[in-house]
Amino acid sequence: MTWLGIRRVELASCGSTNDEAAARARSGAEHGTVVIASAQHAGRGRMARSWHSPAGQNLYLSCLLRPHLEPRAVPPITLAAGIAVCDEVTSRGVDARLKWPNDVVVGRRKLAGVLTEMATRGGSVDHAVIGIGLNANTTHFPPELGAIATSIRLETGLPVDLGDLLERLLERLEQWFDRFLAGGVAGIAESWSRRADLEHPVAVVLDGVRIEGRPAGLDHDGALIVIEDTGRRHRVVAGDVDLLPFEERTP
Ligand code: BTN
Image 1: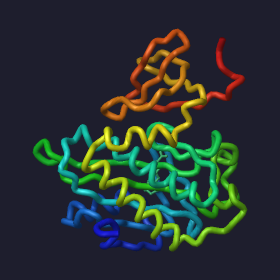
Image 2: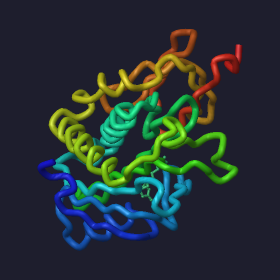
Image 3: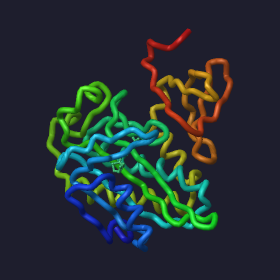
Image 4: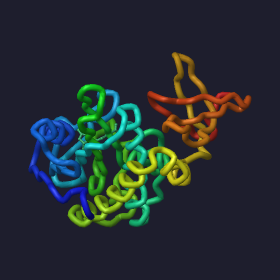
């Protein structure tokens, strides 16, 4: 690693590592600073969801970047982080795929999520915080997550050394962030699509209307392209994409 995680803040517990990283950014922390906690008591996901963050079991980390990008070019960095996570868990024998925009899944179960947040100053990006939650050793999830979450340990049967996982993940994150910062979405789109589940039909709600179709990769700005059976093409720029079981597709 040459820049990511050279400076680190290691916490036993905090509310959210994203909030800790943002607070440090406001106090001048450098590009590449990584905040990592053993536990979070207010871990957050997209759309105001909470992130299950029990102590000592999984990775909860946030990377502080100060990218020279326009604000609208920053959010797809989530996709680059997803690639890094997907590759790391795949190298450990997990059959993981990417689900737009921020999930790493095994089948329909979520293994990891990425939450990117940003602050601007005078129309420019002051900093971005890319938060990653990766379920490593959890074997018992709360009832509401039991059917929709998984962990490396549940997938492989093997316990995970969190220190080793962190170092390897940071290496990969640095490579993929570098690639994104140099080439934007175009530099990572093909790699993202290769790791995404493009076979699975999906459902999305666009302007209040439910659409079913097949994901067909990323548009130039990181939007997901979904194509209906009729051939109609849609751009998904926000919201959730639900993986449909193959048999449950509405005729
Ligand atoms: C999601 O799937 O919606 C994103 C989940 C992101 C969770 C991580 S855990 C580390 C960092 N701190 C947070 O509060 N959230 C992110």
